[in-house]
Amino acid sequence: MQELFIPVHVRFVIALGLSLLIGLERESSALIHKGRAYAGVRTYSLIGVYGFGCAWLYNAGVPWMLPVGMLSITALALVGYLAKLKGGHVGWTSEVATVLTFITGALCLISDIWLPLALGIVGTFLLSEKARFEQYVDRLDKTEFLAVVKFLLVTLIILPVLPDQSYTQFNLNPRKIWQIVVLVSSIGFAGYFLTKKFGAKVGLWLSGLLGGIVSSTAVAIASGRIAQNKPEQCANALKASLLASSIMYLRILVLIWFISPVFVEHIWWKMVVLALCGFALSVIGTHVARDNGETHVGTLQNPFEIRPAMVFALLFVVLSVATVLVQKFYGNAGIITLAAIIGISDIDPFILSVISQTTQAESVIVSAILVSMLSNTILKGIYFGFLAKKARVATAWRFGLLAILHIPIILIP
Image 1: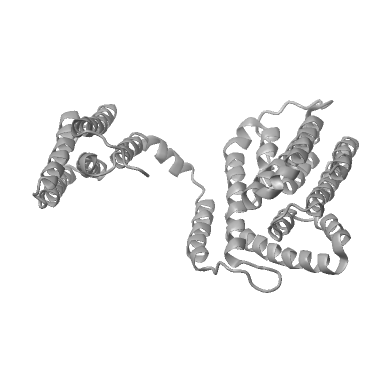
Image 2: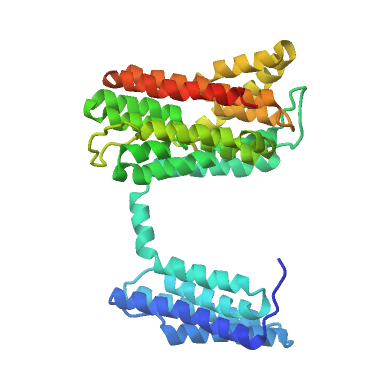
């Protein structure tokens, strides 16, 4: 990033403005809570200016001014904290804000201007959003939070040490495989988080729509169980399942774009058409029951847990080997047959494994992707129809028509 030339007097104004911003937040926060402010607008402004002055002297040939200034501000903050502690008050927030203000003022002169701007603005935001962060902590699911932390920990530890080279005749690259696992889990977690946050508030259909980002098959099973237990919600549950199936095409298109963009040019319009057909089938001729928002798909598994990530990695490796062997011994017909069989399970590992095996967008691979989706669509219809007895006719013709629409799209080059 190229450093911008900003005159000293402009940098001084920025330092003063950022210090004022932090001071305003601290003083307004004290007024809201009807307490006595540790320091107000003027004090924080002076601290920022003090930091700027120390940086000026540092540039002028007095190198000890910056550490001395930092130590003096830290000492003042410590004295203030001890006095506050004697009065029965706890919390380091204002004292840390004091040190941050000094650092921000100094960096306005001696660093690229984006750094103090980021520190000042982000620091003020974090200070002002205390109440909202406390609400998030109160509502935090500790089990899911630990699952995410464990996954990120494993990712950060494992990914850097994995060798970035291909092994065996099947071209298995450990680092590339784990990167794909992280990518798929990240996209799935985004849908999982949105479903958990909004699903119960807006009803079954949006819960299914967001759940499709995680797993459309899981949504079909979960919504089928809802229709089984609450027959009056059959239409809503069917709509949710179809919406999840429609989102599947867009989700896989995003994954293909990340992992092997060369395929996007040949498959994007087919995926979009199928997604639009799914959306249309979910709303045309559907008379849904009133949904008060209490029914939602709540059985999705957190994709950031270690176990599903390891299972995905194992499936990816197995299917990568199987694809190479099938193509070697049975040719293109074998690949298409394998795609149809794989459709009865999770199709993501198969699709991502076949596109990672080649650097060219072969037509047989595009057809195999679409065939696996065709097979998976039929399976989801069977799952849902088996559970939702009162919606079997509607399920059969809607999922059946969506499956049939795959055939001309597969045949079109």
